[in-house]
Amino acid sequence: MNKQPVYAAVALCLLSVAFTQNSTELENHGIVVANMDRSVKPGDDFYQYANGAWIKRTEIPPDRDGVSGATPLRDKTDKRVADLIADAARQGAATGDQSRRIADLFKSYME
Image: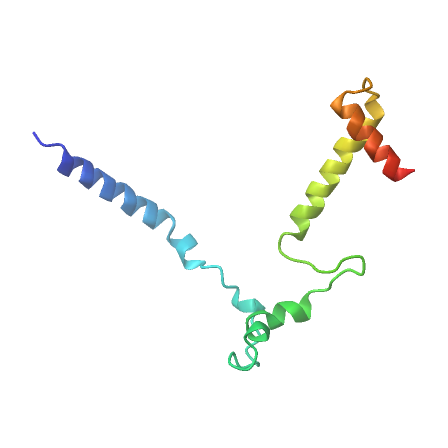
């Protein structure tokens, strides 16, 4: 018995199930219509047309040169790295140890 047609049928069923389960994800295609400024003609200034509403409602903090969707993730990562370095500085590792070298470098910038 040739099993290839059976495997092909199973594969098609699995793809069909996967497509059905992800149909809502497929509809979310990455364009956030709420960020668009439809008062601008796309041919006049496509950047403002595509991003104008987001630009109007997004405030850039004075200590930053810009913001993006990745800003919260970057902030969280920076805090975690700073906490790791501060912990290394408090541990008092032996001279030459990698943790000690990181802590010493950190201390040299903080003094």
